Length: 331
Image (cartoon, rainbow, N blue to C red; front, side, top):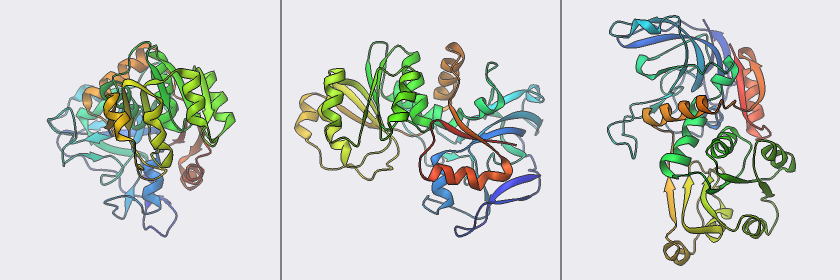
């Protein structure tokens, strides 16, 4: 089968023939129709991710048709259209993942291939209203933002929600999910075009974070936030507690702009603000996310679609964060 293989940190991704996966008991073989990239894939290709091994087939997001299942797996999946929960080994605690938690696409071979094998318990029916490309865009980003917004952030109808750095996969999902839940959503971006795109998706307003008074602008527009979703951190994070309502939740995942700077702790405890870390999600979160997608007929935002053979070009586009929505790869 054809696959995209990371062979070394100093080499481009290789489009090559590899052996089709062999199933073990409880596993399913999925013929991939479309896959999608995440920021995680980019960091792996530049050698800035923990536990990198070579060779590896990248890709966490995927949708396709179940071609076969191993012994002890439910045979009813064969021939079904599915999407894959890419997180496995979460463990027994809902609040945090176990030490055995892994993500598809490293260390296990991922979805940038004609076939991938996964535990059959991580298969879910593909939402009927979505194309293969749209369905493939969902898993990792939508799971992460669902958990951030609802499981951790406890966002509810009427809440004022801020999404910082809207434009990537997680940012667009957070915007769509919060709007669907009846929240009033505000965004930041370094691009006026992305802010306008966010308004078209239901954002009430947006502010360019390159402006010196971006936080003051947001406070004047919103009156303060109940939930803030942030995946950048960096120096600007120090201003987030300043624009929170009492009892607000600031939920963080990722740190593309650096570490958390010095904060005014007095405002945090006086206003009883929570700063909450999260990443990915468990099976309960994944099922809740799919219910939301199906109930509100949410369609993921896709920036561009590439064929599997052009995976290097797709990853290169992610490097400069120019996309709005997900980058998808057809197989």
